[in-house]
Image (cartoon, rainbow, N blue to C red):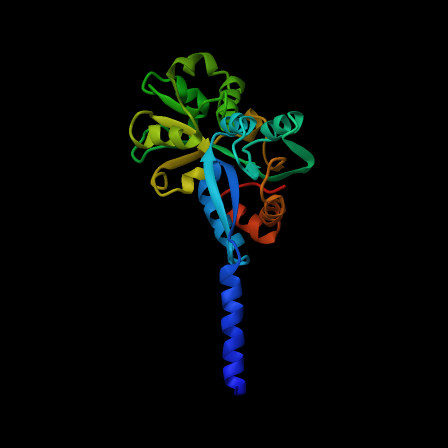
Length: 255
């Protein structure tokens, strides 16, 4: 057998061996505010790991905790706060050594194109105006950014004036949908989700960070993970240079 033929045969054997290797799927429960950033993080992580697939599920952090308690087969939780990972640890569903803050979330008010509401100039007091009929937030019972919005209303002294105007989504994604479809006049959302195509045309005003507790977004490898090594590797990727650059691109603060 000639040398070129031997080399070609070796390449074929190597390719066949790689094809025979079972694919590994990493199952990640990710806070809804991460959607756009997480899709890019997934691509970056998979690019350096042939045969690995990151399966992303998006929702409210508190809802994921309930699912994890009931045996949902996730390997990694990327929460929108540190409270849910703390509950995971307290319940014995994860270890403190496997928890890490990966980003700081930022709360903003989003209004559709053409809106006359200018909270960046007038402050949250403008929400009490009768012209503002509905205010969309994520359900504070399960969504950290919903709790941050309520805290901001209280700190600004407008909670009593706006509490009956609140419409609550099951997650920040649904709260955004309320505003884009006209079901709300304004939505209080993570800055990161305003990069999504459906929200890109709207106007964003930052909510002063002094009005709510800093939103520390934390990830934790779950005790029941089927791919614990991959989960730790993905969390390490997110908090390393490439992952941090992606998070910063979508408006996150970095620890």
